[in-house]
Image (cartoon, rainbow, N blue to C red; front, side):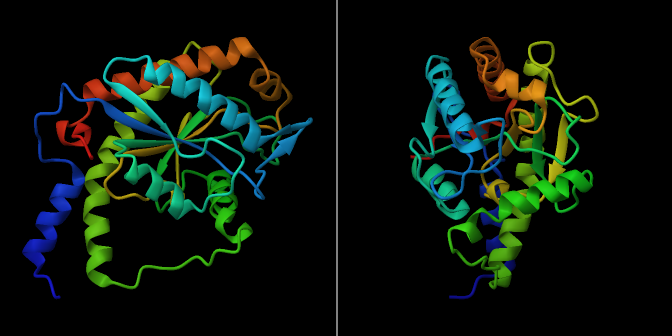
Length: 259
């Protein structure tokens, strides 16, 4: 079936969440995506493994979100299983998610880099380190033997592009709210706590999405913090506050129930 451009534009407008509705009394579903898992361990250093660190943190964050009025958590991965990037997004959608928070704790060749930071989607990365990180994270599917298929439908590509333009504003609102909540509570990357890169996990066109790097496994101070109960409690509480802050600022359509 062929679509006319006006119909495509109308669908894209709906996807962007610009259409408002009676949503303020509803719960916003927060999809928490602990990165890696199963045969894909992620980064490792000093006896720590990324997939384990982020899963433990995700569970703690989920508990705080569930205790926040107006929010409800959904864990995309709640065990040590491998999930493709596409499956992660599919699960978030199936759970009726209003946003996606992907959690990571990577490492860098520059061991002096330190602190938490937040990524939003952009075809143009903020720096070379962001490019390298996105390339590593996007290879997760290859580790599981999944081919990286491209988009072949021109109309679908147009819809995704149009929808993503509207959602990008919400991505930035979410990133800024998280950084605002974390500032003064936990150390942030000094150079630029809000960064951009072309992460596939952030490409759901209708869902505001961010990738949160909790810290660098390659940095000794960050590794110590990642193992600290007190730091994890502060960091999780800050992220929960940031998500709640975003829900107060979000365009109403993005908070509409999805199920």
